[in-house]
Length: 87
Length: 376
Image 1 (cartoon, rainbow over the protein chains, first blue to last red):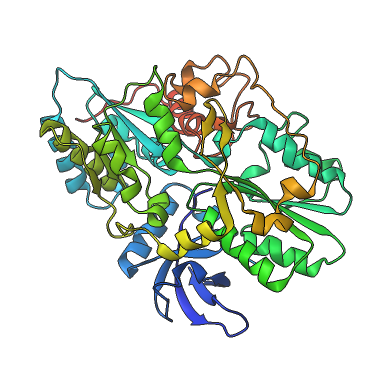
Image 2: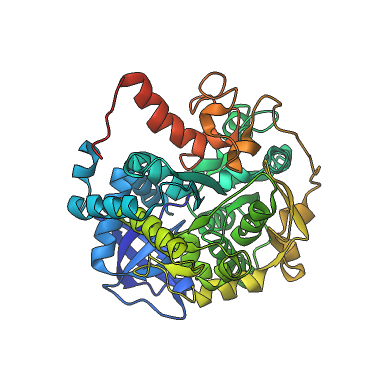
């Protein structure tokens, strides 16, 4: 339920406010970055994603760490399924 | 120990574990509650119990949103599927949670239009793509998840969408901690504070726990080393007679939280006067509902919701386990009638529920391996 999935912002998308293309382990999906409006994201930033929304900015090292944790907890597949499921 | 090898910085892990042993007073029994279900899962997966001295007991808290939802709310949400125009949407975690007449998946098998979404914004998108249907999103989660629902509703209003609603079951963590501290059968020494909830609310909302209740609390990350460090920080506080809020997870959690997320929540939600928690009863001001300005999106106002109250199956002792009074295996149904494959109680449904975590890591292990000798 409380999966926090690390991803890297590829680009901000012009089609609507607060929409960004994110890369999670090679899978690219659209996420909402509106929750980071007070500290806006830019291409290249790493973020933690929860239910399709970027919830915090993190460093690249923390992103790698978080991916490892998901794998150890056996939640990496669920995380990728979630990311692939983002419409 | 074997499992340590797969983790980062194994030497640091064993050094921290040794330091914990050195600082723990052998004449004292420590009861530390990890509030967050993600921590519960991690603690079982990492076998942290085996790294801690036996007088440090980890009590699993109420921080699993699927687990604390009373069955009546599931029935209420599912009652809306009786309307043929309704598409019922929820996160995958909700799909196997039993209601009185079956889980959302079982309703789907009987013909209801039940769909998994991975994000509230996907439920909104479904509404946009199905203008002749009504999309209801069954919202659950603590402050980690509530801001996403809030932003989705703000967008729905901006777009003037008429065929979308939210059945709001968002809960807030602080009143649950307060209820646990007020409970006469609970004696706790300190708290491991939730990680991802705190990215939203920050660390300040925990200050009363330290100041008024005199209990140390450390907001923690999810790695084995994070959790051990947090235990060590709690022990240091207790040894030095301090009770403070400390942030072990600084690399992710800002002290002040996420201001944009808090603003979105304040715009869309208000506190309910009270809300029922599974196993804990009614807790005042512990859950969110939509403000009047968002009434048109409130599924509870839009549909006739029966307001069902269901008592848990008598033999199931989810409440006692949820409050940490009983260990999962002490429940009469554990491992017999109630398993992750066929859950009776909600604590067995989610991987963050303490029963499922205990079953998957301790119970299965115990039935496969006869002896595991700790190296410390």
